Length: 437
Ligand code: DOR
Ligand code: ZN
Ligand code: ZN
Image (cartoon, rainbow, N blue to C red; front, side):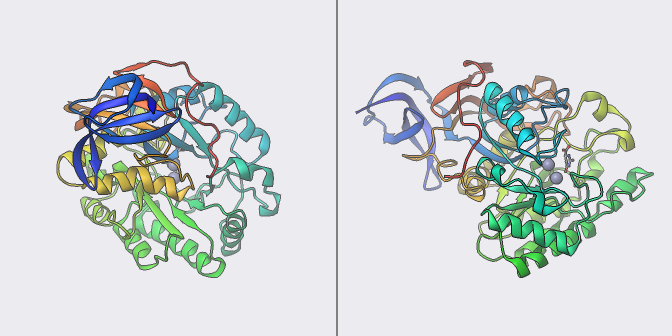
């Protein structure tokens, strides 16, 4: 028995401990993890001594833009950012221009992603103003439905109790999770000062929205996924309402590591929704990232905007920051700093996000899983936005010290990125659109 590719002498995590092993890849799957000296023969051998070999991150919350927003990001730059950042699977949000509410828009996104991808790309769809107008032909090509109660995808849609129930019933009918951005603020609430941004989108607004969706779930059942939990109070509410796997939640690295008062300048560098909260919130969110507590996984919420829109004064600046090239280094830094265990890292960045969206062959470094693998060097450096492959280069993590650098990225058994360079053409590696398995 021989393999196509052997990653030799790598540090891998076995039962929560670092061990030296070799990893065999055959076609697009992991063929085996071998003790040193027991490797099969291989067409190609890569020495990974002193390097970590890990499953690539499965990032279930990413905005890749494209279509009419190519100035912000497109599938080429967005998936390059993913590969360079150690993310091998991305799930693209439907709040694009135009939004994903119909077959023709999804088809365009799939076609563009297929041609330009460097990693696996999956999609979400939104829900039309009249829920009964939902196009069921979208279902096989999406992994969830996403709603934005504070900023609906169609003008005039109101997230009444009735609409939330109908959206949840629709998701349930198709066996999909209903992903939502918890925010009950009124779209037209006046935001005249910087403070207003934080007050309008405060933790009460996050919790109120969360309660409405949890209430609907009590009546309808179905599966809910809470996007970017940012408040301690919201995490506690989730913890109290947990029932098996039907209520899941994610946190972003920025809501885990940054607080609003660290960014006093009048610009949009750290402007996002939900806003950055307090160090107290970080502490609680971090505690809630444990197994079966409130928060199941980490997602980047990569939300690229043009430099002009981020450099603008706070009130005029766009909300959202890039995250694909910082999430894995930041979370692995938590591991190397002794603040997160290996078991927790692998769970929150890889295996559980894959489970949430039904990708049962991803997120684990073991025989039979997809060969979506990253090689990571343990080294200290500082994050620099001007080095990003993403078109969005303004990050609140500018200058932040990290201890892990993804040096090689393998997608579906193909090496796509190696030591700062792309070594394959776009559109060759990975699957588009991802489908449930
Ligand atoms: O800050 C944000 N940016 N929050 C969102 O919910 C949307 C996102 C975007 O698409 O830019
Ligand atoms: Zn959001
Ligand atoms: Zn988002």
